[in-house]
Image (cartoon, rainbow, N blue to C red):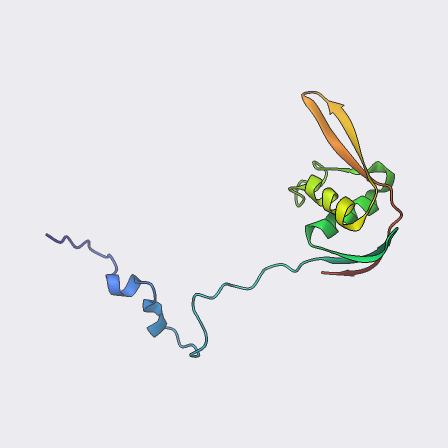
Length: 129
C-alpha cells in the first residue's frame, strides 16, 4: 500500500539529474560542477640563507608571522584563527627551506606550549594573494 503525503514533491522532480531539464545550460556545462574557491592562495617569495625561495599557502602565512613577530616569536594560540598545524608549518620551513627556527618551551599552569622564533635572516621580496 502506497501512502502519499500532501504537499510532498514527486520523485521525478527531486531525482538526481531531474533539474537538467529545467536549467538552460550549454551542453558542456554541468550543474554538478564544484563552485570556485572563495579564497586565493598566498605566495611569498623570500631570500634566506640558502638563496631565494617561494613558499605557498599556510606555510607562507607562518613564515610571514615569524618574520613580523621577530624576536618575540609566535605561538599556536596567537595564530589559532588560521594556523591549525603551526608545528607542521614550522617543520616544513626548517626541513624543506633550511631555515633556523628555535623552539622555546614555555611552562604554564596545566602544561607547556611552544614558542617559535625565526633565527635565520629573511627578507621578503614578493607577495601574491
